[in-house]
Image (cartoon, rainbow, N blue to C red):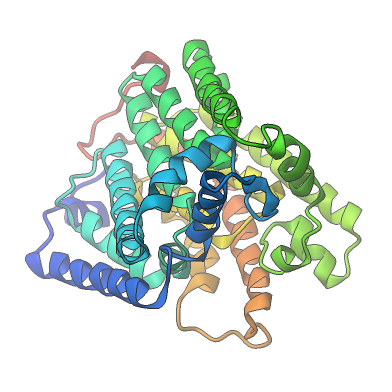
Length: 398
């Protein structure tokens, strides 16, 4: 990364002024307090998991609610929330979600060796909170996607320091809570980190099997939730899904063709991610961009797929901005985010159920931008090192 006065990188990594931190604190504080005042049980999505835990504690099956899409281990993990008084839960969940988002951003910065007191640290989180609508939506919903937003950069930070087994354990715990990061097993496969991959797989399996033994319906996830996910036939959920398989049929495209296009895009994204992994460049960028390609590919075919899933990869890509070869320096990266600007009214997309069209546009553009960068843009990053201006060692050697 160049740190001269002619390059934005030097300005970004210098210490932030106190007014920037004050502005960030004000925005995060306002978002948290507003969420506390307008939500219950920490948000609608968190309430689904907590209600499942309450049902279990009352002797029922959490899978009676078909919108509960988590492993049995998540039921046990949500049990402490089910025991808390609702006023406490209303405050604790938004605070925890905001804290987890901030910690995930901090891990992404440290992955790219960016100082936590830098201008990018303050402005990046401020931009996500105030300029990216899914950030506020995730806080208000209390969705457990936040576990993946924290776990992925933490995993990559550990991997960049050679602690692959610990990185696998982090992903395993995150998958046990919500299976969103399951595609990250491919990164460990690319890296041939077999012990770490075994840990990644064993943690959620052991946790879920153990938890299932305490449920009245131990096979509920396999017999109810999994078929529901494979069919994706929930009319209400489909209105908010951003994957091509859900959006294109609403535009008149046959469902089979829409699903095939999504699968084709996902397969291409995985190939591009593998090429990025095998290509040149600093280790942090390779880890971040390979992971982003894998996760965005999964979002193209996953059912459901929501706009706040983008927060899993966006901080990783944004934190790499100081690198000369980063995807965040490409114009299409920023153009892909335009539909997610809060406060902008888009013609013909005013009803909330039409939000999925702009969400799908953002997902497809961002996935295409990352895939294109993985194939043709990595050599730019190979000519320069990390924030210290030096070449970093290859990931396999750390």
